[in-house]
Length: 203
Ligand SMILES: Cc1cc2nc3c(=O)[nH]c(=O)nc-3n(C[C@H](O)[C@H](O)[C@H](O)COP(=O)(O)O)c2cc1C
Image (cartoon, rainbow, N blue to C red):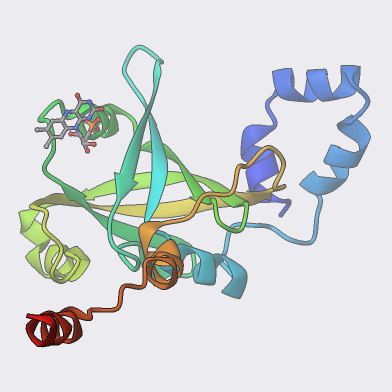
C-alpha cells in the first residue's frame, strides 16, 4: 500500500498540475513510499496529545467546503487507537454547520497547528458522531474542569496524514507559555509594611 495521504489527495487534476510544473516524478515516489502515513507513530501521538486546538473541514450537500475551529485544554484530543482520535464537541451558536454536514458526508479533514514550533499536521478521515447513546465514551471525552457543555463527541478514523514544512508560519505563543516570562518582568516587591514604618517614624 502506498502513502495514504498522497493516494487520497493526489487526484488526476492535482497530478496533472504536478506534471506541468515538474514535481510529478518526485511525488509519484511519495505514493509508493514505505511510510503509509495511515497509522500514528510516537511523533504524531506526541503532537496530538499536546494540541489545544485544530481546524476541522467538512463538506456540505452542495459541495461547499466549511472550516471551523475546535479547541480545548491540552489533552482534549484523545488517542483511541493507532489511527483513531476522538474529542468532545461543545455547545456553541446552534448553527450546527459541521454537525449537519457530517449527517450527509462523513469525510473530514483536520488541520493541527503548533505555532510555537512552526509545525503543522494535516489529516483526512471519516467522522462518526458520539451521542448520549454512548454516554460512557461521551463522559470520557469531557475535559475535566473545563467550562463548556459537551453536546456530542466525534470519533475520527484517520485514513491518511502528512506533515508540512514550517514555511510561512509566524511563531505564536500561548498565555501559558509566556506567563513565566511576564512574571519575571512584572516582578513587584510589596514593601507596604516598610513604607508604613518609615512614614510612622517620620511623623
Ligand atoms: C453565543 C455564541 C455565539 C457564537 N457566535 C459565533 C459566530 O458568530 N460565528 C462563529 O463562527 N462562531 C460563533 N460561535 C462559536 C461557534 O458556535 C462554535 O465554534 C461552534 O463549534 C461552531 O460550530 P459550527 O460552525 O460547526 O456550527 C459562537 C458561540 C457562542 C456560544
